[in-house]
Length: 165
Image (cartoon, rainbow, N blue to C red; front, side, top):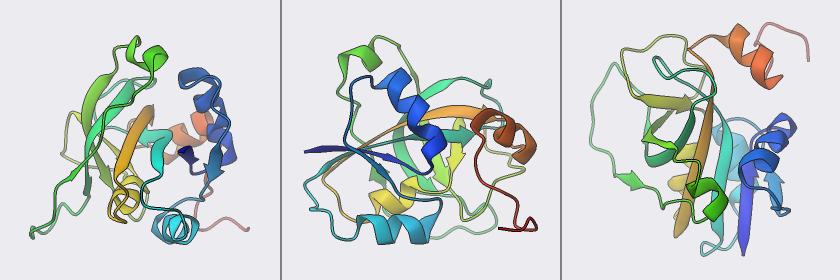
């Protein structure tokens, strides 16, 4: 069974645009803890496609990225980690878009600055991949160039930590 993972309801429009006809959508919530809780009971042979917004230091807003590998974003230290390689998105409509292919770095917070180029940043994908699913693919749409304000304008998503909930 194929399941589409989105972090927030605002990302449903991405599913409609890039994977039309998909109806098995799971809204996980933003960040590592929400991913772990949302996916812990799914069979590990479930085909997952994570689609959502991501930041980038240099890709233009609106760039569609097919993620090839997921890593954690920890620019201040280096330590050994497993390679989290993703599967290609097996969808003829999406393939025809000829997406940019790149690495996605997952962080526990919104990335506001980074020297990393030709990649995207999110808050979920590495945590999805690390749970042992046998088939994970990802589509990221660049919403901002490391600006929380621009992300909010494009995605209508997460609030700042200092705002009341």
